[in-house]
Amino acid sequence: MDFNSIVSKLKARWPDVEAPKVDLGDPFVLVPAERVLEIARFLKDDPELQFNSLMSLAGVDTGREFWVVYPLHSLKHRHKLTVKAVLPRENSVIDSVVSVWRAADFFEREAYDLYGIVFRNHPDLRRLINPPDWVGWPGRKDYEYPVDYHGVATLREDQFFSEAVDAGVTKREEAEKELQAKLGLGEKK
Image (cartoon, rainbow, N blue to C red; front, side):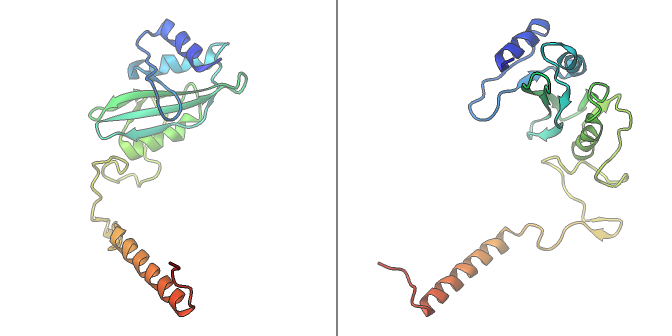
């Protein structure tokens, strides 16, 4: 089934599903966050769709809002669909889809750990990457890293090293020119 047919099938049941025009990249559907679980079940269970594979799940911070992105694949029909739900930065809560695709378990925990997105009814929503007592959500664009964690520095002096990289590139270019001059391989005019 092609993308437009899938969108039509979804819009027949949920008129508020949108398929924004995409100039670059793959098309996707925007679904209402409060309907994500019922739409996920439909996408998996409908015989014409059978999106039985959740390939990943990602949280995204746009700076204004959060997105939860669900790339889906039907192994039987060999079609794909990317589903996105938009959440506000404050009170970012969405239903878990672990009951639909078991693979969502660790993906949802990662999105929770990095962005603070709460997946309602997740069977074990806790941090996955950061320690349990970590404060804040380090994937957020506005996150400020603490100076230390239990006395261990979290930032190195060269953490943001663009100037060091630029200086290194300049130094390497100068060394290459010097070597070329020594070997008589200077620029030809």
